[in-house]
Image 1: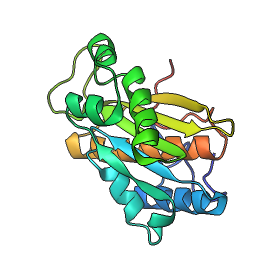
Image 2: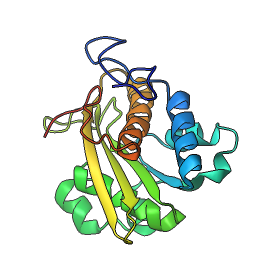
Image 3: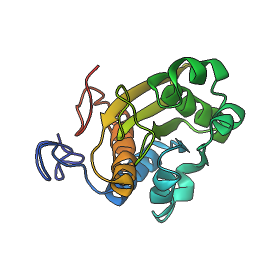
Image 4: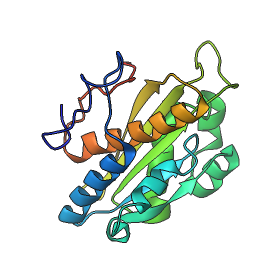
Length: 196
């Protein structure tokens, strides 16, 4: 699969996992698509700590399509600013599919956007477990539909590398996940994605 007919999302590039275009390339293409369609996006980030939002705002004219973001590193911030329930965090953990989706949905409301993407994960070097090793990342994508409803989805990744590389890859995976939903290719398997 390609982003716009030229740069691969997977199947070529670095290592067994293929490649994802650079974060600035992805942000630029997402921005152009959103601007062309008169849509907006927001971010809700935990493990990436604002990297996705920074990539978006590095694009000239981002104010036309990027509404803002919430860096919700602490669980209480996830609850207070994004509306994630205490029960979801207690029952599934902050690094989980349900929390990633709730974060993305919360960003829609907090920022008044049409699209939102979220990240929650374990960048390491500590904090991993057998069921959620270091490199586990969940990316949530939420969108408002034409009938006023909200649809949310999630992708699960297990990324390798040191802390900073995991964070960079998580940010790229977040934007790649948003791109796939935005251009109606939700079934595309991305590098490092875990099928569930």
